[in-house]
Image 1 (cartoon, helix red, strand yellow):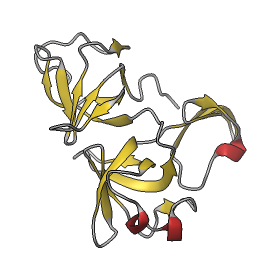
Image 2 (cartoon, rainbow, N blue to C red):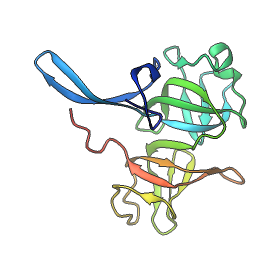
Image 3 (tube, one colour):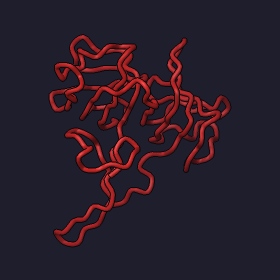
Image 4 (cartoon, rainbow, N blue to C red):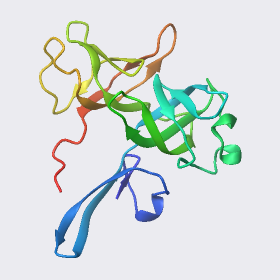
Length: 189
């Protein structure tokens, strides 16, 4: 089990977390060899909709519905109790082709988290060493690039990637990536 990028156990998983299971099957017998939990975005809450049905986290639009599990570390298990500009959250969910995240699980995190985001690349500019995921600009000039095609023009557009690193909100929301890697590479049965 890998939970939040750390070695863990089944007891570290919570209802609503998204996982990838690697394993094998033979007839009706199935055996997992690895369970990997990955969130869609982890970072600062920028805003919460007044109706409690969406929030913005690091430039990502997150939809919440009656199937979204809200951790009990959020008062009242309601995103309306999150404080924009102060609270950090981890959102598990499914990234739609338009980049919107359909949340399956949301929990409040400690302030010292490493911001990370998964999503589809748009506006890739290899000259400027930037791209966007949702409304978040990612600068990868000094990042470790792992298993990505060589940047050339806009060739990363449409790729599903994960980027990690500190975020600056001085004038615009920009993540200075320390690492960029593709998602779901090598996933089979």
